[in-house]
Every structure is written in structure tokens, then in C-alpha cells.
Length: 104
Image (cartoon, rainbow, N blue to C red; front, side):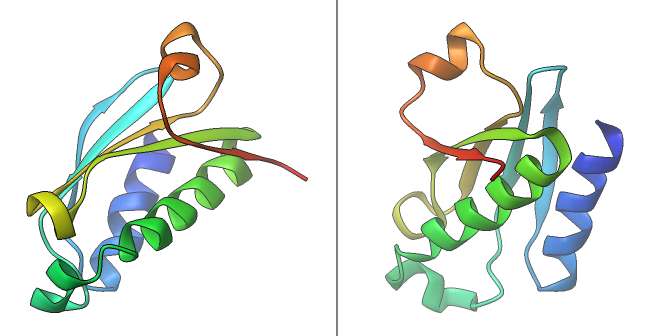
């Protein structure tokens, strides 16, 4: 669990993002991010949130076998990312409108 959170922060730091782990439990991780590798251009590129979700979902599914990524806030719309990554199915994850990632 700790290694996954550290990997997310580290990978994004290397490309110029500013991810911070807000919460990690046995069923989910919550991150925030206030900086994009694309700088201020990110504000006009809402599609970047799909890329972010895909990267995080792929990392999580490779680590846990399942992932659901909710982009509650995005840099383009809200000025920051607020991201919840579920690493297993739960009542909360089932209620969440988000993208599921499964190992193939």
C-alpha cells in the first residue's frame, strides 16, 4: 500500500506534477495535484484528465488486480486534481461514477 502511494507521487513528480497523498486505506487512495507537466496549458486541455486516470488506473490494476479511478476535480475545470483510486470493489466504489480498470 505504502509503495503504491509513493510510486504514484514519485512518477508524477518526475514528469513535473505535484501529487500529494491525502489518504490511504485498505480499499482506496486519495490524491491531490496542483501542477501539470503541461503548465498553464492544462487549464485548456480537459482531456488530460483521461490520460491521468488511465495512468493511475493502469498502475493500480497492475499492483492490485483491480482499480476504479474517480477524478472528482480536475486541473482543467477546478484548478486542481482530486483523485480517488479504489483498489478493490466496495459499497463506496460501486456507488462512485468512475472508470473501472481490470487486469486482462
